[in-house]
Length: 148
Image (cartoon, rainbow, N blue to C red):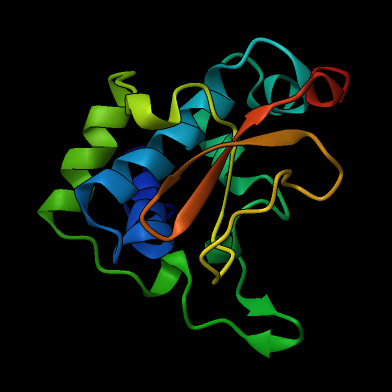
């Protein structure tokens, strides 16, 4: 049986930012919701009016939605997660359209496994560095994203 949107979001939050504390998980959840609600560009077309599931399941967007990475099994995926109450609480918070203000309208996040965040992410220049929350760097859309 497929997961509900709430369950899928809770699993994604746990998988992508479970070790990042409440702030890190809220930041990732905010990006998902920002993508679902942005009125222009690629994510607006994908979400077709705010469908969170379509955003989460968009191919190539979240490592945790892949069963393999680089030809190897990816054990860090949503199907292997067992969300706890906190993951559901943050999913519910996000689905109620709350925003974690330190990431504002960011549409992208990235863990560089480094103390420095690249100025742009993805590499195609559609996101400009905005803020860092724990291990993840967060990026606001550029004009190039608007045209995507």
